Structures are given as structure tokens and as C-alpha cells.
Image 1 (cartoon, rainbow, N blue to C red):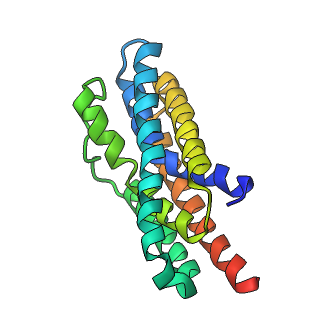
Image 2: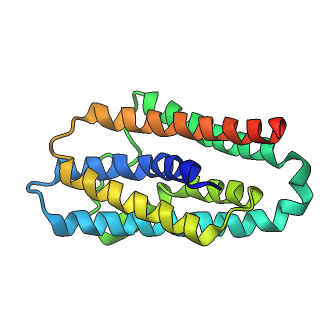
Length: 187
């Protein structure tokens, strides 16, 4: 995977974690850097781990789906992107509306929950024969930085931005899936 593709993928995958970080930032009474670092490190760790796990799963099934791998990547990224957009557009409350990531167990659960899409992206990275360690490191670093900024600026951001961030992340994932398909069909 090329760097120009990895950076948008990293930002797209970080949008769920960013939205949770912004929510936590809105609940913080003061802008505490220590708390923001805790959020950033946890979310960045899980966003780096899950693509690697997805990659391992992807390489085991790669030989069976090689002829349709570009369609699989499109379906996985399209499904994740569409789900992100759908969830952002729903008017219902978030699954964990009152949860505070100050609690370490809650933070771990939210870190896992927001990185499920990164697991599926890891399968797509295996299909693309990407080098997973640099990809996972970039995804984790981007997510950590985005979450730190989200937590620190969360007090100033409105709840509307949370919805827009998830929609943007979903659109980027769908476009990356279409790009993968077009690269294979036009090559």
C-alpha cells in the first residue's frame, strides 16, 4: 500500500476513536493533558494491534480468494464505511453515552470497540500484500495523535462535529474500497 493511500486510511479508521475522544473531552472539566494522553495511547494501541490481527487472518485465506480479492476489499471497506455513515446519521443515543474513559476498563472496551473496523482493514491490507508493521504503526500513530487532539479540543467542539467526523470517515473508507477495485480492474 502506498503512503498516499495509507494516510487517508489511517484517518478514516481513527474517526470512531476521535469521536469518542471528543465526547470525553466535552465531559472533562478542565483541559488535562494527562487524561488526553491516556485516551490517545489506548486508542492508538488498539488501532495498531487490530490491523495486524486482521492481516494475520487475511494471509491465511488469501490463496483461496486471490481471484476476487479486490471485490472482497471493496465489500469490507464499503460495509464498514456504510455502517459508520448509518450510525452517524441515526438519531438514537450512542451505545455508551454516559461512559467516561477515565475508568481504565471502560477505556479498554471503547478502544476495542472503536478498532473493529481496523481488524477488517487489516484483512484488506493482507489482500493488498501490504507490509503490515509499518502500516499498523502509521495507523496507530495517526489514531493516537487524532485522539489526543480530539480530547484536548473536545470542550470547544460541539456534538455536531462528532457526527460529521464519522460520516467523513465512512466516505473515505468507501472511496478507498472503490480505489482498490478500480486499480485491479484497470491494471
